[in-house]
Length: 171
Image (cartoon, rainbow, N blue to C red; front, top):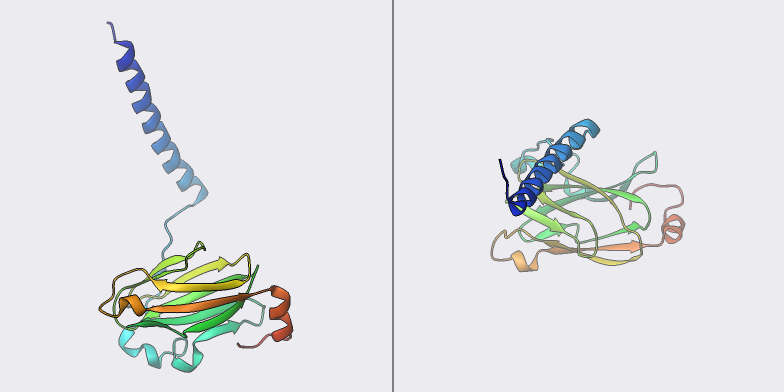
């Protein structure tokens, strides 16, 4: 049986692709890699009554063990609070909930982007490597005021943060 050399090359390429796909599936199962998801649910109609997402609980929180958590709400047409300050070179956990429709959170020049789905709590942990002002934009069309949906994150040097928050507490 004779197989043309060009057909052999394409056969090897196809078999290599199948092996690559099967290998990546096997490796992801063996290592435990899975798509990011958060199945924590919340009632959007009662969001303002929840302890975590109540209006006076929004913003930056320093946990007793030193971890930093930012609680935010996405709603037409803004992220609340509108401005937060966090330290550089520190893991920051952002937790969002939507009060109305689907929103997307994107911070240009960072690796942070997520969807905020009504009825679910979105959670992302990231680190900002350098100080500066970072815009937080909605990247999912949410209505006529979508273009004005933004917030600002100011990242300060870790030493500056520690001077402002010597014993922890809330910001």
